[in-house]
Amino acid sequence: MLKEHIVRFDARVTVTITGWPAWLRVPMLAVTFIGQPVCLIIFAVLVALVNLNNHMLVLAVAAALGAMLMNTALKHFVHRTRPDTLYVSNMYFKSSSFPSGHAFGGAVVLGLLAYLAAVYVSAALALLFVLLIINIGVSRIYLGAHYPTDVLAGWALGSAFLWLIIGVFHP
Image 1: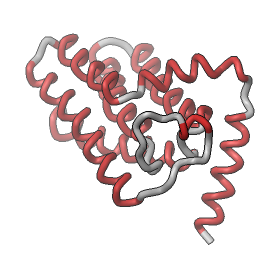
Image 2: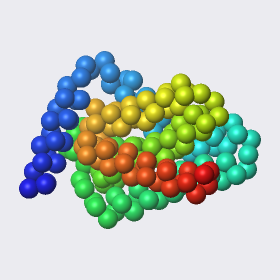
Image 3: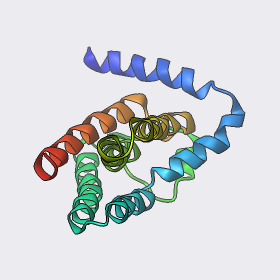
Image 4: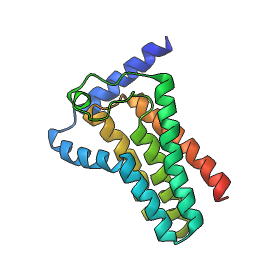
């Protein structure tokens, strides 16, 4: 019964988001590119460089690598197939769908940037990082790479991992 609700939810949200205008494809591709692991590691290193603090470098890189490892393990355990879309068939690196690695990694790394921005810079900059996290997840649905529940799970698990990191390393 729960599976039926998930399938209906995924279908409704997917139809809505994939029905958005075609001109959004290029911006969505750009945003999804930002959520790739390589880009997120670059963001993690930038966190450290902005702080000029070895502790932050270790924290940021550990957060990025930890997120990638945890996400890979979850994908292997759950092994949900991706949507049957042209985008997925053209993907260079094939992996399972659940949870979304882009949403998971974005929540951890960009969430850490948002947290640090809120604490040390400004709430406005923190909000921009949060909006980027949201847009990365939405781009994965728009492009057909993930189901909405994959993205929601990525955000939830990534946020939990982020708060664990903040609580341990930066209380």
